[in-house]
Length: 413
Image (tube, rainbow, N blue to C red; front, side):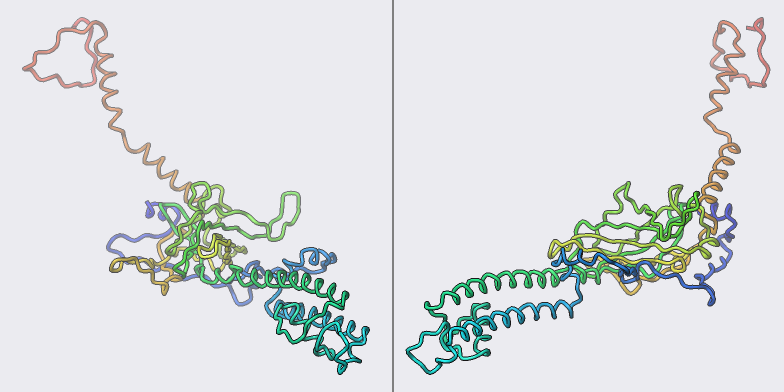
């Protein structure tokens, strides 16, 4: 069937004894061609920057997410400053209380009852603030019951310190437990390929998971990023079109324990329905693939992304197998994960391939007689030849007369 399709589309196919011409190598854009700017990088980072954002206060309304989204160096800086500022702030207040009550002027007076014992300056007040907020309690500096303002300050610092601990530790915990790094072990093939599968052109790419802990409820999506202009003249930059990878049949839900080849069948609903190999070489688009699932160890949702430009789609190639049967298990060779091999593939579009197959099927239908029609024709001839009531059956010994196309007269019967 594939050879017939190739013949209808103008792809030469040699006989069994003839050497087939090697397929054309993957195309390379000319040196003068402008390289397309990626919408999504190969490592999954979105190449989009937000500029001229005037309503910056919206970031402060969700301060927790803002802190989690910060880079690590800024997150650590905020974490250190949050504790240092509160320690210094309350240490300054403890020193101010001791200064206003005159505790610093009666350091050698044992009959004087200070607000905080053994607080003799700003450094000791700062250390007492750290002990209070972190609940260390060395026991050398102790607040007395003769200082009501100190008791109130002690309650405020204990409450505020607990809030700072909950907020900052929560931010750091969420940032550490983010599943972003889990996506580093989810790999995509470096190229996508177009070849025949069951006599249908398919766009395919490969995904794999390097870890032994699997992604639960994994699902795959693919989108075509391409600018277009509507019939009304509106230009839509980076228009997004879904590429079907098995949503209707459930093939988009993956059991990702070994590398899988994801296939997009190029049919009437595909945006590549009219794209041939020659048109693909001149086209300008980007295919974004998105793999989502839950991390088995933590239960958090993980998303891995990658993309393929037009010059990263190889027409007439197929992925090499990487799964083999070893002793007692299946072995995956990730050394050939990105490797492809050329295969005979029609250079025409999927529409032309389908039309050629329809013409071939119609030609075979009308050129080959059907044996099912012969009993019907013989029955019709026998009925026309009878003309009236049937006569006696022929003698069993004599063979039946051959039918020569003439009709018997009624008188002969």
